[in-house]
Each structure stands twice: as structure tokens, then as C-alpha cells.
Length: 324
Image (cartoon, rainbow, N blue to C red; front, side):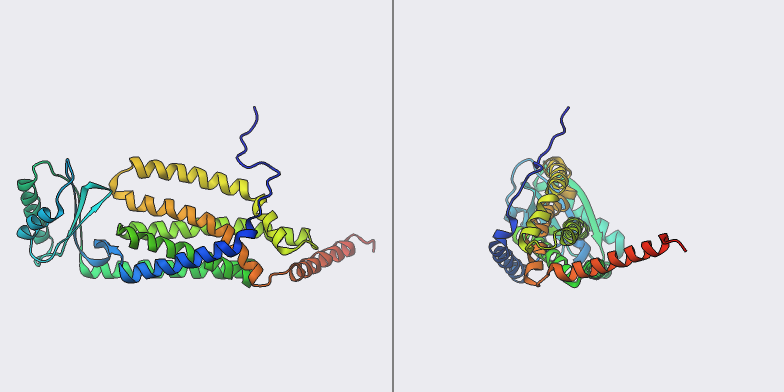
């Protein structure tokens, strides 16, 4: 039985010839994402802003203005009502009442009763309650976790390879995170701790894909000493393409199934992961590798270093094997 090969052994795609177009598209996308976050903002969940979040599903699309009137009559303060997933699914976010947990539970029951009175077909999902102090700590912790993850990754790659590789990996990670933020600012999907977990997972996946390509580039720099850098980068990407396609495809299939059939509570996480896997694979090929060309990576420095190590190893072996 022959093994299935999605990528033939003799594949020779010229990825780097599109590097200028890809970089222009990426820069425009990054700027657009930052502008979206700055203008539209993120739909922060109760994990980050505090309050009470209730998810309600109706048998048919509901009029948000009428629902807002029902909610305003039942609770004190301003309520944030948004559709998510479909026109029948609604999230209702309200501020926490004074009086602690008992007051919050009573407010939730009053709101449920008011909605059921106006919409007997309503089905209530989870009700999340987070205090303002806890939400502030969660937001700060989530931001620092992403920052230190990217910093540690860059330092590791810097010492593992060269500074140009660390810079390329850092830019690719920034590209992936920025575009994911832009997706959530554009769609106004809820941004909560699950999305922070998705971002950290995306960072890890993108880094893993980038390191696999970087490791093959370093091997080829030592193996093909006279080859130009651009053809060498294309060769390295093509040699790792089968692994990249198989890994990305299996993950994407799983995420698509979860997106269509999975529970609503992980819809945002799944959407972020699906988008992040796509842009992470793209950035490994079109961001991290082309930056090696623009940062003047050459085979001479790597070959000289590797050659010195090989020569030293050969001298040591020769000295050890010589008769005394």
C-alpha cells in the first residue's frame, strides 16, 4: 500500500519571489489591525472588565431593541447586549450590583424572569460573574504572559541561531498576534481569557513551524556553500513543506469541526485558533524567511563558524587516534 503524499518529493515552489508582495500585504494588514483595535476596540468579556455575563438562546432571531428594553427594566445600570454565533444567540453583560455574591445571584434571577416573561422560548446558558479587581488582575496577567512568551522565544532563537533569525521570528509572532487582535476588533467577538490561551497557543505553533524551517535553512547554509540565499531559502521551505502542510491540515480539519459543531463557549477560542494557524503558517514562509534576505544573512559567516568547529573536531579526532 502506497503512502499518501500531499506534497511530492520534487516540489519546487518559488515562495521568495512573492516576498515583496507578501510583505506589503502583511504590513497593510498589521496597520489595519492596529487601527481597528484603536478605533473599534475589543469586546472585552467579564474576565477583563468585571461584571456579569449571561448567554441566552432564542428559538428565532430576536429584536435587540425590544430585548434591551426588557433588560433595562430588570437591572440597574447600563447593559451591553450583543449577538454572537447566530442571530438567535445573545450575550447580555451587566455591571455587578452591590452586596456581593447573593446580590449578584438575585440580579441574575430577576433578569432571567424578566426575559422569560417577554420570551418564553428563551434558553439560558452559562452565567459568569467576575469582580472588577479580579478582572483587572487577569487582564494584566494575560498581557504580561504574552509579552514574556514572545521575549523568551526571541532570546532563545537568538542564541540558538543568530540575531537575524531572532528578529525574523519576533516579527512573525507580532504579525500573527496583531492580525488576530484585528480579527476580534473587526468581528467584535468576545475577547476573554480563552482568547489569551488561544493567542499563546498560536505563538507556540507559529514558533514551532518557524524553527523547523530555520533549522533546515541552517543545515542548507552549511551544505550548499555556494548557493545564493534566495534559492536556498526556497529549497529549505520546500523541503519542510510536507511536514508543514500535514500538520496545519490536520489541525485545521479538527478546528473546523469544532467551529461548526462545538459548544458555543469555545466558539471564540476555536475561531482564534483557526485564524491563527492559517496566519502562523503563512508568516513562517513569507515573514520569517524573507527577513533573512533583508537582514543580509550570508552563508559565509555560518560556514566559517561551522567549518571552524568541524576542523577543530577533525584535529581532535586525529590527535586521539594517532599512535603515541
